[in-house]
Image 1 (cartoon, one colour):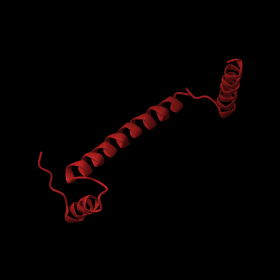
Image 2 (cartoon, rainbow, N blue to C red):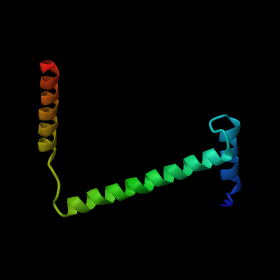
Image 3 (tube, one colour):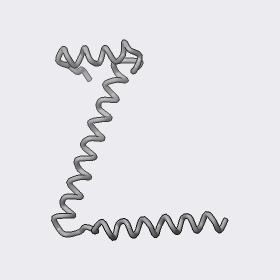
Length: 82
């Protein structure tokens, strides 16, 4: 694959390599692509949440906190029984 970057992006990648943050331009660009993948995954997950909320498939915050408290109490109890 051959990638053409605008000068400011090229200079930025080079500065990351020159500073030692990345061993090579390939490594820096690979990290950039991984961030894009993460961003797209996050956007997809957020859209799923929005769609669920639009359908009324949500749990109110009181229920969420009650469930978390109960889980924490169970974990504490299980640890004390060991």
